[in-house]
Amino acid sequence: MASRTIAEHAEAVRELVQPALERAAADAPEAIGIADPGLAGRTAAAPLRSAIPLPPFDNSQMDGYAVRASEVAALLATDGSRATLPIGLTAAAGDPPLTLAPGTASPVMTGAPIPHGADAVIPIERSDPDRFTSLVRPGDAPSRAPEGTVSFSEAPAPGTFVRASGSDLAQGEILVDQGVRLTPARIGLLANAGISEVPVVRLPRVLLLATGDEVAGAGETPRPGQIFDANGPLLAAALRGAGAEVVSRRVADQPAAVTALLREEAPRFDLVVTSGGISAGAFEVIREALTPAGIDFLAVAMQPGGPQGLGALPGGTPVLCFPGNPVSSALSAEAFLLPLLRSFAGRTPRRSEHRELADAVDSPAMKHQLRRGNLDTDGRVRVTPPSSHLLADLAAAELIAHIPLGVTRLEAGDTVEIWRLDD
Ligand SMILES: Nc1nc2c(c(=O)[nH]1)N[C@H]1C(S)=C(S)[C@@H](COP(=O)(O)OP(=O)(O)OC[C@H]3O[C@@H](n4cnc5c(N)ncnc54)[C@H](O)[C@@H]3O)O[C@H]1N2
Ligand code: MOO
Image (cartoon, rainbow, N blue to C red; front, top):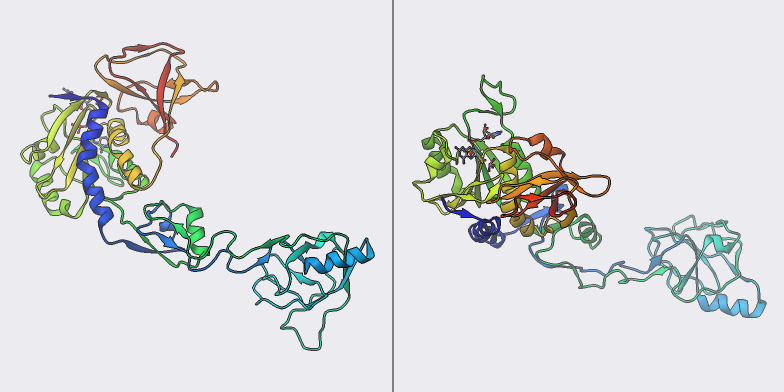
């Protein structure tokens, strides 16, 4: 069996899978409602521009009085310490804009349209009295008229506490560009501009096949010798988390059953991922079913995750075959597939850092070793044992430490590359 480096196999997987992802991106976009939580994390399929300026109209940044700055300045120039103005009609948020009568100050609430004629807002706490004494809105009974006066001791500069129309985004500007991932803030921005449906790139569709007669599904009663399926749910979660739509199937250890299932179902998917049944045993269902179809089974110089398979199925759908040990399956996805899906979904790659090891680590000379671990309180890397059935250790890990090919031992204090498993 030929043995490849992680980088070489990652490149082979990229060459196989990337064209399928690109075909998915070229498909007709899906429209998702702006308030649908499923919009989060999707990718915009077209540039979206704002039909309106944001904010759409000049509005107040404070609860206070809308004034003409020049009138307040002129009164202060005369009196020296106080500018006193009759109180005008009140502008509340949601009201249509009113007109500020000359020589008056209008109570205005945060978010309310700045009255025509006003050009500044004086916050209520800088007004005398520092509470509203007369609040009459244009729609109130005709018999009611605003009463009393309000005084100010400072003249605001024009524009003070006015949120100008278009100051967030001008009309016609791009809200979200094509290919951009829809974060909560971007969804909020689109909503603010009145977009009700967003065209998004359809998700890559992955058929996930967990094999193994020893594997019982959730809710089943395992027979003696059986274990519960960990890889199906683990890989489904990993692929979904990286931005794929996943359909999971379990199949008996019969090559004919695998072949029939794939012939029937694979053409509807962008990618097939299998777990288990690919190594040197006597009953390697995936290897037996797919070798005649030209799928390549090989060894990557990597532990865990050494045995791998890849190729295109007869209908053209690419298939990746991961080894059955749960940690091997998880790290195969982590090393080869998730980076492609994350990048397709507009996500940043896993953060890679270099950190000191807390303890010495041994590693086979001819393999990259991917050890799971955590940072200790001094920020040094502490790894767990290497066996690929230790799923509880992976579940508790915050990082993967990469001990490169050719390195047999790293001492405490040596630097090691880590990938952070933040999300
Ligand atoms: N003689 C050799 N034996 C093995 C070799 C080898 O080179 N020579 N490689 C070992 C390595 S490394 C790995 S990894 C495994 C890979 O084997 P398979 O991909 O064929 O996987 P299985 O044999 O089907 O299963 C391995 C292991 O994982 C458990 N498993 C499988 N599916 C699931 C699942 N869905 N959920 C939970 N656990 C699962 C399965 O019961 C086995 O214990 O081969 C080594 N052997
Ligand atoms: O490669 Mo296996 O994945 O070491 O356990």
